Length: 190
Length: 190
Image (cartoon, rainbow over all chains, first blue to last red; front, side, top):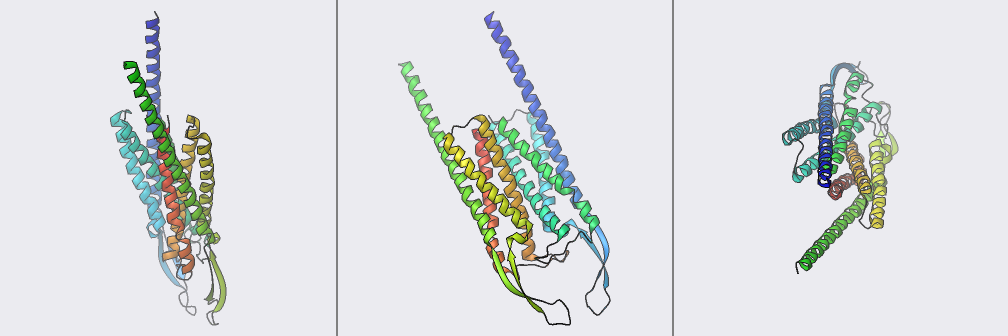
């Protein structure tokens, strides 16, 4: 009788363990798919942001201003290029990590779990540094700075700024999702 | 006899476990002290960087240039203020985490270990975003950008740029140390 009871207990515990493993795998998969979408969207939004405008510039004070067609796009600013690059890297990495999760069906060795944790941690670092760089230059474009005499850009290229701006919260959100994944990885580490 | 052998084995394993715990605590303490020094140095270096110079500016083309005394300091650029702030926060946090480590003599509950892991992870996020912001503005000051017509600053305030520059690698190094601590925390998590 007692023996049977013990078996039931073990069975129930195994059942509970399986369910826990399944739900954690579901949470992880959802988070990784979310990170994939966020990083892809952030890179695309910033990559396609562009505005062309005729700007009149006074080169010689005594002569009338010159009308010049100028274009604003992300590739003209290295901080934006950096932001697009880290989002692209994070997007590629996420696709690979999802493949690993699917192939291993959630049962990964300690070594593989550690590699995934390190990968997720590197993505936290890259995405937060990308957010920092793009925000610093974005704010400078929005407000300018009289101390270094850098004029604001969004006064002239308002559309470009509007189109590019959403990539910042998207990158920040993706970075926070990766922080969550690092914690999830740490909990799973045997 | 066999019983005695088992006791010896257990004793030796316990000894090994103690030594491992001790060495991990030593590594962690060293890393936290290193992070304390790096973040303190980074905040100080950038905070005290300053240069005052007489700059001649041509306000009205037909009149001779005007000599103006101008000062370059970190507080004039929000990205630098942000970098100093995150280093100060990380420095304060590190002092607290060292105190926790000393008081608990390395034997921390699962909950406390998780809190410390989360804390270290937030420092990774803050320090990398601080590095990104300050590097983006620093590079802009070094090279300028003809597309947005922002002139370089270091051509005029070379000394300020030289004095401020070391804070970037210091902040980056501190951020990497915190990444290492996150991995150490994850390994310790029972």
